[in-house]
Image 1 (cartoon, rainbow, N blue to C red):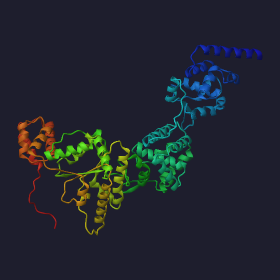
Image 2: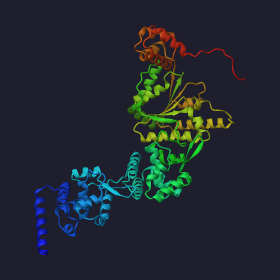
Image 3: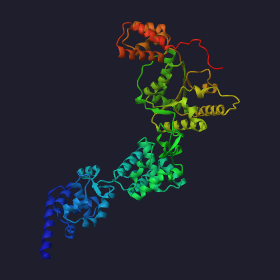
Image 4: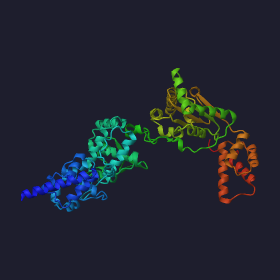
Length: 571
């Protein structure tokens, strides 16, 4: 009887080998052959010992054991099912679920290699799916190899965080797998300043691996989701065990966990009161760990009075200047063209001159100072970092000096990491460019002097492009005047320039009307735009009026506030 079985096995192997010789071998062929012979095989020892050509082929190509090769073929055959259950495979093979448990380690090996993904829900019922990247590799007759996530940029690192936490939220990674993957991700990207700072913080604050995972989750929420209101319900997906979940919930609700106690995270505040159980990254943590990202909403106070505007997002706008301004703006625009800019910087450096360019745009309100800076950025392909100077004093009392330095240090870091140096714009900079106080005694005066001295110092070593706009030059400190290489005065437009502005704003109005308005009213470009908007709104609501010129003249008169000699209030 045993001889008959041996002959039958040999015949089957010979037939399989003969058939295989006629067919092109690839991974999909191997799966087809295995499936043809494995159905109802029961995974018996006799079947597994058989020198099956397709099993051997798949096992050698993918560096698997024979049983792993059979299981891989079954997973591939069920690739359209995103929740493959082991009892379905057991029924197909005609073997018991208990027997399948013998091969649990083999299935884990496929999961560890990334060939299949395991999802375990709260009932602990494991289901599996084959990732699309593995299927694509099979189609190309290639063995899928998990990429080692090393040498990533900071943006790529946070993209990886996004994918990993999403897999964990979908229960396609166990917590232990997530933790180890995150540690490996950090170990493989030690070149990132963020990873180096994370290691420093974890050592100084005595954070264990579990707390590092939680800190990375907070960073993920802040960077990828722009979310700074983190409560227990946002992080409970990390843990599996009910006991661990209950302990974390207890700690969050009592404001008693390591990241909070060590100052790495802090309470959210509402109406000046701390919100129990709601947290965010601490301000200093953001500065220490996330400075590499150059986020527009980040500084030592967790906020930034400025924002970065991409050059291709700036709306084109026609500007009309008086002759002298037009020449100066054109010269500056030519300098800021990248080829000219690099050449001039290199030549200046060779001769021992400063490489930075500080520019002052000054003149009456509404004359196009800010808009000129925007259009220069757009035309030269430079991003623009706009600092809202009006917020500086109110935000930075007590830490003014440190934070004004950070504005410049962040800018210099951005210059070094950008293909083209962006423009740093201090808009309406009167408040911090004024005459320094001699013999300052009050704390506010001393702070203002310190801030101004720092700005003067930073302009001396500036590498890049700095533009300040101001309406009041009478109060400009002479030391600042010397620091600005380009000083362009924006005066109110001439009649000719005003006519062009009117025509660009209201092309549908008769030209002779617009010429009359230009002669009659000595308006700035900003005032003309305001009137044009008023006229357009009226036209949308009420349609065209009979006396267009009269209507526009009335809008012009209304634009100027009446300045009477009313009674003064106060002492």
